[in-house]
Structure formats: structure tokens, C-alpha cells
Image: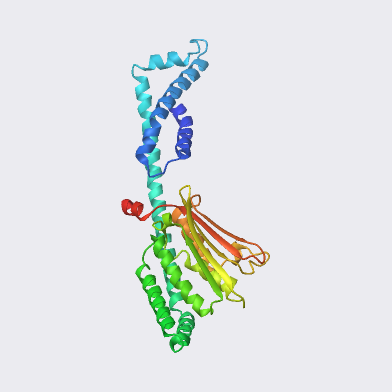
Length: 320
């Protein structure tokens, strides 16, 4: 009878463990939480077993009280049932942890593939003949008139390419380095668009050390310029912001262009850059710890908001 009761209680034990607000990797903490639970479920098993037995044999023995059952079982039965609880729990946590490791290996492999695609995409964007042609053409236009400007743009281009290659293999980098990359990219775009682009970068000082996915902002800024500023004759603005609230890092890229067309669906209409960014966030931080939202008002531009767990380079070093 006792094993039948354990079979009924096992799904409840597993459900409580899954409900606990603890990481599946925090095995020691999970065991600590289960100490009082094991006492409760052992007592519940003993009383349920005694109650069922009493109801089956109601003519032979009266219905026991929980106090009587616990008192009578302290001679050894309670300890034996207590051990059974931990055997059940240990078997479940072992299988769950093995499943989690396998799932993480799969997610890591998928993430490496996505990062590889992002790296190649960024390098293609920076080394693409069209991009280089436009940039070098802009620089050449300043060589005779404004040699200092031409020299500064060449330095920006060289630094941009250096940063692309230096961090091409990294999954995450400090936000300060990501911002440095974006600022140089924006300087080149401003020169190419003849100052029709106004770029605003506002990053709170306390988030500069935050770790972010490599090149996470570049495709968002590129889209804002391509669709919000480049098609217009008048000056347009692209704003990049970063701040921190309640343990979350928030990143925002906004333009003041025409906005998204009516009926625009991110699941259907989003390009490779947006889709890749969304997938990288999901694989890095899961579905619940990150957000990726695109909002737009007609004639008021497009805003892309990202939210991900805040962790700085110090936390990253400790994890290693």
C-alpha cells in the first residue's frame, strides 16, 4: 500500500520541485528546500497509508489520528519512508539534471551556429564591396578639401574593421566595446549621408561593464538608418540608449522615420538581422528572461527595445 501512495505523491513532489524559483543547476539549494518537504510528505505518506488501511478494514480498527500515526512510526517506519522520499527525489533530480545538460548542449551548439552567422553577417556588412565603395568614395571626396576629415574617417574605418575581427569569436562583450563599435559605424554613416544623419548615443555609466551579445546593436542601427534616415532628404535622427532597472539591462534603438508600413508582421516581414537577433537572445537567456519588442507609430519612426539579464564582466569571469 505504501508504494501505491508514493506513486500518487511522486507527481506532486516533482511538480513542487519544478515550481521552485531555483535554477535547475542549483542542485544543493534544491535539496535544502526539500528537507522540510521530505518531513511533510513522509508524514503524509504514513497517514494516507494508515487511513486507507483503516478504511479497508474499518470493522477491525478505528480511524487513526495523524498524531497517533506519526508517534507509532517513529520506531523505524518513519525513517524508512523518509529514505524512500529522498530516493524518489534523487532519481528525479538526476534525470532532470541530465536532461538539462543535454538541452544545454543542444542550445550551445545552436547558439554557436547563430553567433557564427552573426559574425559572418557583420563581416559581410563591413567588408561588402558596396559598403566599402560608399565609405571609400566618401573619404576620397574629403581628401583634397578636408584631409583631416578624410584621415579621421580612415581611422574610423580601420578601427571598425579591427573591432569586427577582434571580437568575431566572442559570444558576449562588455557594452562599452559594443558602443565603441556602434559609434565608429555611425561616424562613417554620418559622413556618407552628408550630415543628414543625427546620431545620439545615451548610455548610463553604470551599465558600461554589462555583458551583451556581440554585435547585438549593429543590425538594429543599420535598419534604423536604412529605413528611417537614408531614404529622406531632410535630416533624420537615430538614437541608441542603454540603462538598467531591477536587474535587467535595457537597450533601445529608435529612429524618427516614416515608421512601419500598415500590416507589418515581424514574424513574416522581419529581415535576417532582426530574426537572428531575436533567436540569439532566446538561446542566450531563454524565453522568460529577455524581451525583444518592435513598436512604431506612423510618421513617428520605429523603436526596437531589448531587455536582458544584467551581468557584468566580473560576473562573467567568476562563471569561467
